[in-house]
Image (cartoon, rainbow, N blue to C red; front, top):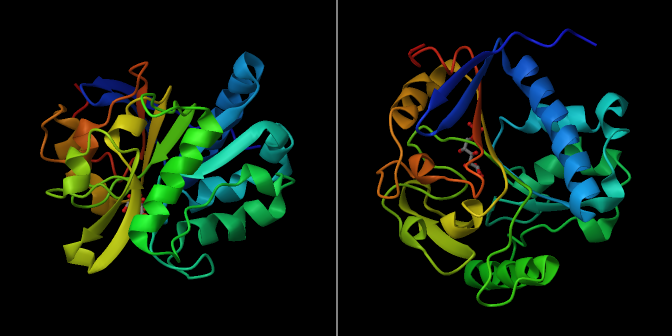
Length: 259
Ligand code: 6PG
């Protein structure tokens, strides 16, 4: 196994920053963290409930988790897989976040089908969001006044500072009660389904995975500040135990000052 890449550790208002040589090293470190958190959660409370992120960055991580060097160390029988957001497309659509995870991970591991909780993007967006919120409440045993607590939420970062499907200037960003919302994203001319900040902020750990030269500017902007009213959605993300960790590769971290 390749040696663990040297990482640079920084602290920022937006959380702890770990910088890796490239996407491969970033993904390997994220896979090791996934194994560690999964075993810790199962030992602690008998389950590991994780929300997977979408887009392209996590594909390498999910592929690694399917490899024996990682998959044999994960108690899949006790892992409950959810998604942080989904495109409003069928599961076999190339745009589907579930579809990507199915291709590179789900069909290669022995996880019970009942442990995989996809957002039904093929449905009417409002119905899909309501159905997913009900599923979350049932899976976590969280009644109307409680917020489910994920053991881990994986997130990506878009060029405009969005994360999950919480885009700048959308009502989804201001949601304080619902766990899951359907949102129409003008710039994409598309509907999305997304977890809301109340759920993300209630999780035990949040890990952002960000890679590539094209993200260097937005990464520097997001890490420069944080806060509940911040304009950039990713700056609003918290975690209950204040455990927000940024996994960046060197190109994405190029404008992050070392101070
Ligand atoms: C999605 C994601 C979204 C993604 C960012 C980064 O459904 O697209 O949830 O928030 O993480 O847009 O996407 P890339 O990894 O493709 O750059």
